[in-house]
Length: 77
Image 1 (cartoon, rainbow, N blue to C red):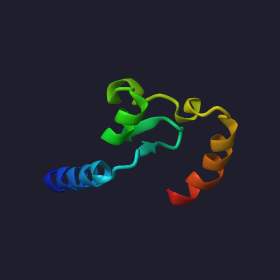
Image 2 (cartoon, one colour; image 1 turned 45 degrees about the vertical axis):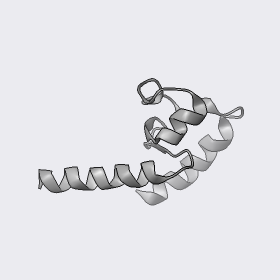
Image 3 (cartoon, one colour; image 1 turned 120 degrees about the vertical axis):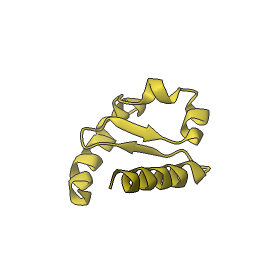
């Protein structure tokens, strides 16, 4: 079972990294949990530094994505 989870995680990582566009994943609390190398390249912020930070702090009007996320994120759980 653990082997299968590792395989799935590796596959998910490869899909994220295959994108040339910046991709960020967040948890229900709005904390950044992962991002691809394109995000690191475009922001100039290391993966270690950005992980576990508040996603909404990176917007000039943070309340807009907060409202959107609070409305739609619970629907995908």
